[in-house]
Image (spheres, rainbow, N blue to C red):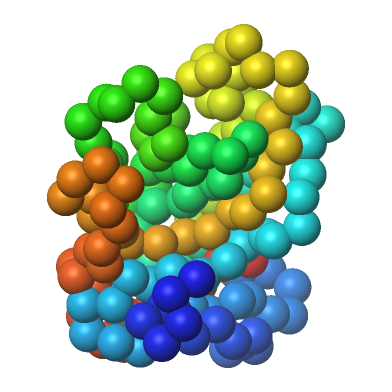
Length: 163
């Protein structure tokens, strides 16, 4: 992650959708990239295709889900715009889909999508789809493989997630 510019992630018992706790992510730097890991243990998307979670996100928070799969960055649109970058042979970063019906109104909602289908549709010639990292972030891509902070999220914007 981006260290000091990423989100501060804490366990919260005051904002749970169901059960006892939720994970609260707070942007600690004005214009920070809001980056925070969802998962850092590798998994095979063919064996575990579905990703689902409850979320509570204000309308002005702009972040997407990013997966590092088979040496490439794959973006799944959550609340930010899809990123585009000029193609140079094999793209190392590209948008592969979006999470349907996301509601950013600071109330608890539910999201579910088939990551395996998105990966297979994007790159059908792969024999396997090993997800090495999965995280939320607000990145912009001004040029090929140049990541910069999105600068769209003010300090203290928060997002809560329950798995």
